[in-house]
Every structure is written in C-alpha cells, then in structure tokens.
Image (cartoon, rainbow, N blue to C red; front, side, top):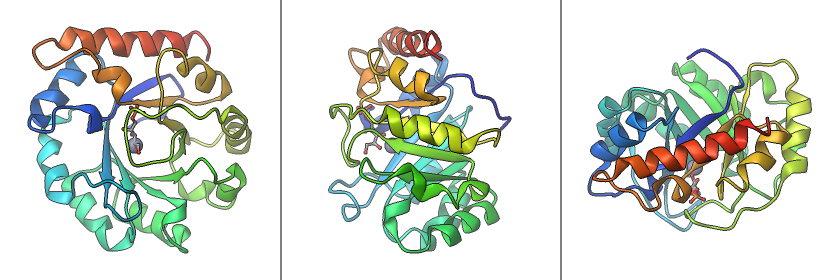
Length: 228
Ligand code: DX5
Ligand code: ZN
C-alpha cells in the first residue's frame, strides 16, 4: 500500500447482501471502490453483531484492493493474530475499547498490518496526540457505531484539528458514518481522505444492477474531490 491523500471511497459491506458477500465485493470493486470496509461488531462494544475472523478470511480472496477491517469489539488484543491470518491490510481498533490502545496499535503493526485508531463522536481529537507515531489511519466516527443508515453528525472541527495535528505524517483520516454526496464535501474540505459509505453506495443497486453502485461511488467521489 502506497500512501497518498487523494479521495478514496471505501464501501462498507454492512449494507451489502449478507447472503452474497463474495459477489458484492467483486461488484463494488469493479464499480470503482478504492478500499473494502469490513465492520466487525461483537454485540458488546456495540449493540449489533456481524462476523468474525473466519468470515473475514473468506472475504479475502475476493478483495483485490485494500481490506480495511474496523473492529467494534472488546477486547481487541486476543484477536489481532486472527485478523492478520484472515488477511486484513488495515486493522482499526477503537480508542474507547480498553485502557491499552498504545499496546494494541504496537501489536497490530507487529502482526504485519497497518494500524488504525477509531474515535467515537464524543472522543476528542487530542486523545490521539500521543498515538500518532503508532498509527497509519485515524477513523473519525460521524455516527455512534453499531448500525448503518444513521444520520451524519457534523464533526468537521474535530477533523480539521486532526489534520493539523497529523501534519506531514503519512496517516489517513477516514470518516465513517452518514457519508453521502451532501456530507462528503464537508469532511473532505476539513482534511479527510478515506470516505466509508454503506447505505449511500449500496442504495438502489444489487449484484444484478452493479452500475448503480458505480454511479453512487462516482457521485460521492466527485462531491468530495471538488471540495478537497
Ligand atoms: C457503523 C459502521 C459504518 C457503517 C456506515 O458502525 O462502522 O461503517 O456501515 O454506514 P452508513 O454509510 O450507512 O452510515
Ligand atoms: Zn466502519
């Protein structure tokens, strides 16, 4: 993975057909997805449950771009090796998931993956000030994690602050939650480069009508790129 700050669209397969993940992943990549975002939920850290390491490992052969795995689980550390084995390129853990995020980020990199740290809407930008040399991505949640299709929370001041803190470091700012062609320009202008989108990518499309995914991805990208 090389680093750049161009806009990258990362569809979340949380909004895909759960009976057809392989074909859905192939369809979004064929339609222009830059990364594939995989939401792992444990029914404990967040009030919803999705899938674990065996499912993520089964997705891997279908992902030709970047497999971006967002853990909404607690604890994290006992599962890091399993997600490395599953083939995650980026593994993101929540700063709120435990007292030892510093150790967790070291362990993720130690297992050969890029390390991400995610911040819930109520967590301040400054909480990552002493973690920036340990991470490759900061994920700013613009909804409370757990479900797709929620209303965007405007945290552009937090994104701008993070962007200034990051400076020249090769760290992505990823936005997750409620991203669509209306909200994408706000976060891109504030300094985000990776835009996760679930409902706004999958709405109206299917593996039989994949061109709708392509149109949706293109609309978000165009709106964001014009603001960056
Ligand atoms: C929320 C997840 C998101 C979610 C985004 O907990 O982390 O990735 O799928 O969904 P939309 O784009 O529908 O808000
Ligand atoms: Zn996510």
